[in-house]
Length: 174
Image (cartoon, rainbow, N blue to C red; front, top):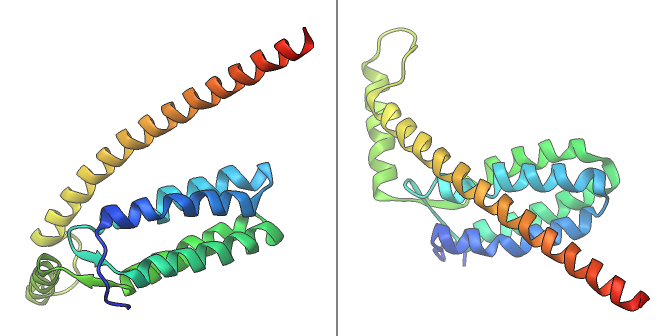
């Protein structure tokens, strides 16, 4: 069961209901925005950033759900500051529940070899680390564009809902 592979896209799509579950549990307006923003931006985007080097498993999905739900309950009763602990736990658990891709194994070995060749303290990234950093920069730009489009769509739907609610309220008064 733990080695059942999922694609990063399927895992990301499976995390969408989790956003609504966490939102429902957290409940209060003060904690809700901070909690969902931190979880979605930092934790729930990990499958996208790790897609080249790691393959998520069913254990990754189960871990996300269990840790997020327990964390949402802690945030509900303890306050919004607990979201930081939740993000840190998810940052350690996700890589531990994935399977390394051939590219991930290869790049990891190259980085270790390049680090062994360095004498003294390493101040500059190795060529392999720079390659990974370039791909992460590109991923960040892609993620920012998608996040902006998502937020624009969210605002559009909220305005539509409010407009429809306002129209039905006016009709009930007449």
